[in-house]
Image (cartoon, rainbow, N blue to C red; front, side, top):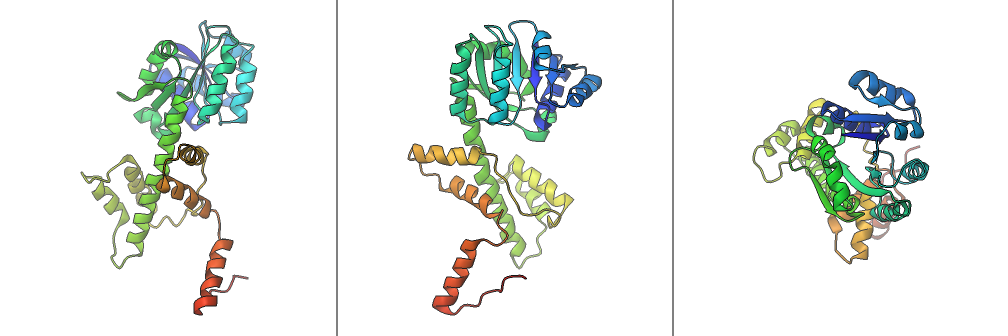
Amino acid sequence: MELGLIGLGRMGANMATRLLQGGHRVVVYNRTFAKAQELADAHGAVAASSLAELVQALQPPRIVWLMLPAGQATDEHIALLTPLLQPGDILIDGANNNYQASIAHAAQLATHGLRFLDAGVSGGVWGLELGYCTMVGGDPESFAYIEPLLKTLAPPDGYLLCGPHGAGHFVKMIHNGIEYGMMQAYAEGFEILKQSRYPVDLQKISHLWNQGSVVRSWLLELAERAFAEDADLSAIRGYVEDSGEGRWTVHEAIDLAVPAPIITLALQMRFRSRQDDSFSARVLAALRKQFGGHAVKPAEG
């Protein structure tokens, strides 16, 4: 098949490479043209210097896949592409976008006769080698049309039409919320091990747990890899960003009155990681001193 792929960051460039290796024709566009040209030189992509050039290089019905940051960047490109595309063309949003935005995009594009699919893509920088688990929302006919691309991108049984518009990004949102909780549990467990009386080797422990234990996982394999590179993780600052899906998952849990304490606390702990000396911690220390005479540590400087 052929498609246009817009956005050649870590995920987009690797997805384009995997599709090219699978025999598809891929027309690529990036704000920095050098990235598109690099893929053309290295893997045989067709480099486009503008959105119009990308659209013109594709035969209708066109497939255009966006791998851009969620929110403004994706919104702007959808607006720019809408007048360039023709009725029957398919636009796919592969960003970690809010599912409500995807529902709106589908409705907006339908007024122009354009088809829309939202695709939650998981696999990170390992997707080129292992494949991308892909969660799709939209109509069955459009899904069936792009299925050969999904078969190339994903590992066996690694893609699914999850439901109508928005369902792909909704399932990916919950996926990432679960990921927050799993990561937090591993982080806390390894810290307890590190602070214990026993001289445990965290790399060996993570390797051990992956040999048939109930907590084995790919995240644990990545932990083993991280400990092998830096046993104490001393080169890393404990500052953890969140890209939005955890927040949306918590909001959805509140709206649905579903208790989600683990995911919620994991999100809050990410916020805590960004504070070197939180005011709330100082309040706690001050209160302990006031009611119990407990010692406090003086502020640095």
